[in-house]
Image (cartoon, rainbow, N blue to C red):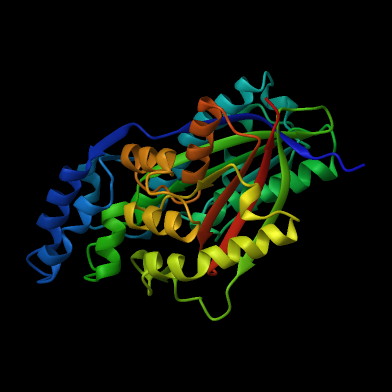
Length: 350
């Protein structure tokens, strides 16, 4: 009989520098308004995201100066190391384990480059064993929290009794650009923050919340929906289509298709836990899934408190849902570059 993976612990962490949305709008106006006539028209985006505050690995003054790859990478390595250690220690501690008990580490990150990878950089301080298995994953973007959980769950199932640590960490703010005078750059500036989430999973010895099934859908000819460009100054955000419109038109049938492969239907889901890209995306998700407006309350709370942190954001939603009490069956969903929908069905026994 298949031994499914169970959630042993969930933890989240944000970096120390908290900035309110109004401060970010003021900073963006000072940097861009004189050079980009459309800025004032687009500035309403900052008020319409549902975001009240966000967190960054650097104080706001750091972002006001032009930065190239060397400075961005140094900031990424320093900030990511610190955030990785904090969130991993929380998750390992909540699981009543130590670093030496971790057998497999899955690291999901798409907002910086590190070789050796992040889990190797912090292995000594975290107390990982020398024979720990490392699975770094790059390029999943906003879908990374759910896709990473899917990968980690399959590794746990393949090694019953092993402790698998998933860390999803993104430092989106380090991609802020002064030279990109585009709507996509304004959208990114209005949305993204930094954060990390970690989960310990184990298969074979019980657990009240288990990974029931996983699934993905990759739409053909959608490489231009979301992603990065790479140029001399750094990463540049790609938003070539209106994502809320895409969600309204495509998400419902895609979720039904994935659930059918799980031998489930939408009626079997007691709670949807979704990656909240922003207020308009949340409204589009509710419409596409046939939910009453306001149903995705955890999602609205997280986006207000932390902004869109890319991959870990949906795991912040999961942590909040776990704290409030999960229903018997939840579906974790996220959309990301590819363009991809990733889903994980969670079965909870009270």
